[in-house]
Image (cartoon, rainbow, N blue to C red):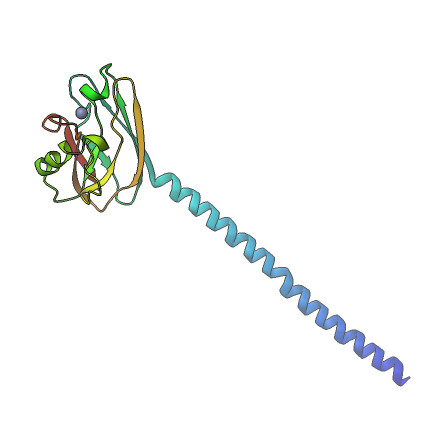
Length: 173
Ligand code: ZN
């Protein structure tokens, strides 16, 4: 009789522990799953809202087709530059160079003239937020960068003599 009682108590104890364990174990996977789903959803939404693609054209008449590029601070910006002309880049090369706040356009353009071997981008320049490569007629290039803090930033083509006509503003909200 004694042995039976002990066995029963053991069984009840084991059953109780099992129930407790299975309850705790049952809740955890549910919580983890719902958390993961929420995170994944938020990340996707952020990526969509936080990325933008802009396109700007240049031509054989030394012109950009836009004088303003509008983005939001922190946005991942993809900028596409197209050259709709036919002239080679040695004669009518274009790029887009976005300058940091406070950089003097004329000073930068002067420095760029001396950087012909580097597509008119002064080596190790600290004045640039982002720039495309230099392209000729029929070519295109694209760059991706993170928009800086709110403000207005100058962009130019740094090919010698072009900045007086080929300039505009990156406007960051
Ligand atoms: Zn140009």
